[in-house]
Amino acid sequence: MSKTTSRGGPGGQRPPGVRSLVLALVLLFTLWACGKNEAPPPPSTGVNITQETGPGKRGPSHAPGDHAGEPSDAQRIFMTVCATCHGIDGTGTGPAAESLNPKPRNYTDAQWQASVTDDDIREIIVKGGQAMKKSAMMPANPNLKDDTATLDGLVQIIRGFSKKP
Ligand code: HEC
Image (cartoon, rainbow, N blue to C red; front, side, top):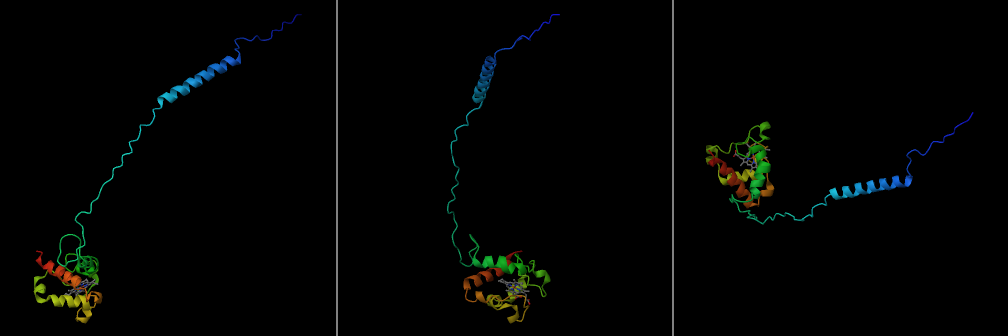
């Protein structure tokens, strides 16, 4: 009856200190390797591409009949106001003309162009259709009464439509 007590030997157990050291070394190596692979960002040159926009040929031009450059007041008014009824091509087929009766005149009509004077055109623009015994849908523009430059410009625009084929 003998009992053999064999306390499990320290089979292959290494002192913990060595293990930690190896781990630490591996970790250090990994960190070092990673750090090496990470290339530093290229130095930015900091070049800004700036476009210089010169003043160009722009300039105020309000002279009536000046067809080059910026639109005159008359051109702006015609395109934004009058063209809604009279059409940008002067044929009287603007988007608002559909519901009008009578319809606005076709400015390209040579016969009509010949039948009116510049003063007639100026007068109806200022006084409106009703005052001229025409359609009240043609609005009056009393603010243009003394603005001869704009009035003349509008007359020229209306006259200009006749030249188009
Ligand atoms: C709301 C629609 C409308 C707008 C906006 C309008 N018109 Fe008219 N215009 C008419 C109608 C409709 C007539 C036709 C009147 C008639 O024949 O009874 C007319 C007639 C005219 C006539 C006379 C043509 C003729 O038969 O002798 C001139 C000139 C004219 N318009 C210029 C202009 C100008 C310039 C503008 C902008 C400042 C303008 N109109 C804005 C609707 C408009």
